[in-house]
Image (cartoon, rainbow, N blue to C red; front, side, top):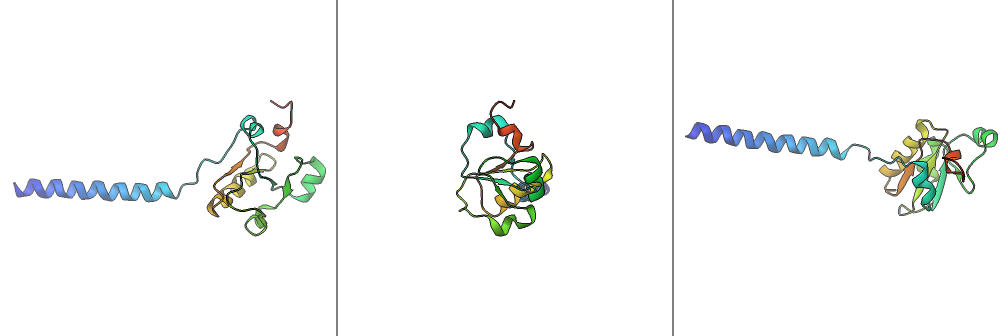
Length: 126
């Protein structure tokens, strides 16, 4: 009888430990911050950040009223409080995602990023 209680107790402890490990791992995952362009067009954002270089903005254009903040300066130059809804874009590369993740980790939980270019936000785009 005592051996079965020991086995059951050990299994309970193992399940608890496994759950705690899972919760710890799960809490460190990045949230899903991507937004599709159709949803983004339907939303209002307090700030739209372009994380491309100034040269890219000059040569390729930019979304109206967006502000340029490079990925390496995002933590230092964010000009709004954490409650502001923010949209981040780049040229459809990793920079927008990284910037959004950094902002989220700084407490900006209303941040989203486009995996496409700003052109997908313009009227008439699919």
